[in-house]
Amino acid sequence: MKYSLIFVALLSITTLYGVETAQETQIQNYEPASNVAEPQDQTIGALLAMQEEMEANANEPVLEEAKPLIISVLGQGVAPMNTQSPAQAYALAKRAAIADAYRLIAEKVKGVRVDGQDVIKNMMVKRSMVRTAVHAMVKNANVVETVFKEGLCEVEMEITLFHSDFAQ
Image (cartoon, rainbow, N blue to C red; front, top):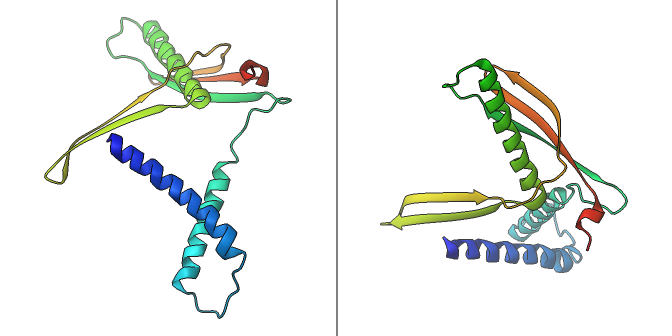
């Protein structure tokens, strides 16, 4: 699996390099000869479509120096079946929802580490395992709203990030 992740990373880098190269060399000098689409023209169109998709993903919120960034998440927790009372079920579901909200905030702020492993035998996948992990410290997150119905507790939590918290 380690080698396949390296292969995917190299493929991504070469794809990005190919998009930049195609844009700089072929597209600037491109003049349509006729209305018939040639295979090379289709390749250029596909590269342009990939570049537009990458630019669309780059429009995610960015932490700016003058403007704080508010991250809002919705954590969910389920009440266990073997509780002594409805109050205990509510308390446990709320605690699970808060823990889920903290995890979601940490994922958005710090990112998620993904480790995977595949066991292949006779050219078939025998076992596939994916692990995710987040290591972060979340401070000053506020619970905005708590909703509990039919054994499901949903907690809306938000955190305000300032540029000065990350500047060194």
